[in-house]
Structures are given as C-alpha cells and as structure tokens.
Length: 126
Image 1: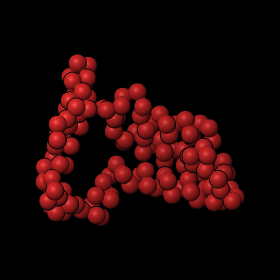
Image 2: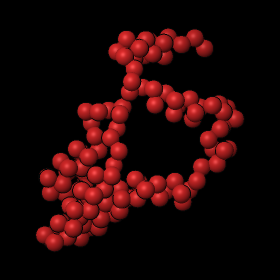
Image 3: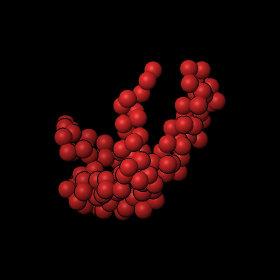
C-alpha cells in the first residue's frame, strides 16, 4: 500500500475508533485494540486473508474501513429499519426485549450472580 494511502487510512481508522463505544460485556477485548494491532502489523485485512495482488488488498481494506465508518452513525439501521414483526416474532414476542434487558444487566452482575445464571441456564426444566 502506498505511504500516502496508508497514512490516510490510518487517520480515518483512528477517527472511527475514537467514536466506537467500549464493549461493557468484554472489557478486556475491545475492537479498538484489535484494529490498532492490525494497523500496526501493516494491514487492516484479517491476517489469514489471501489477495491476488496489492490493489485487491487495498480495495478490501478500504471497503472494510468504509463499513466501520458507517456503523457508529447507524447508517444501516436507518437504511434497513426493523419492523415490529421482526422484533416481536410470534414464537417468542418478548425475545428481543428480554435479550436487551439481559445485555444491559450483564456487565454489572456479581460473580455469584453470573454463576447462578449459568447454572440456571444449564439445568432448565422444559
């Protein structure tokens, strides 16, 4: 990748990562850290990705960067809004509301509560 292009991608990535929210469920594994390591290694592309040439690799990196830039602004949420039918399936209408409540509650749980929830899930009576 050319030096000027590399610098531009690095600065754009830095701006995106500053906007990216921290993950409260996995405080020790953040997207910002993973992407910074990839950039330090010399590529935004996944380590095992194979490209036919440098231009294909550069195009893939640019596409990945554009997708990362679109996510914090909820571009796809506005483009593809979710309907009530999607969010409240007939088989389990409260599923997504329950999932959101669980995700909001999970980071603040104590160790004993986490273990109790795990055991409760393992030995559920159906």
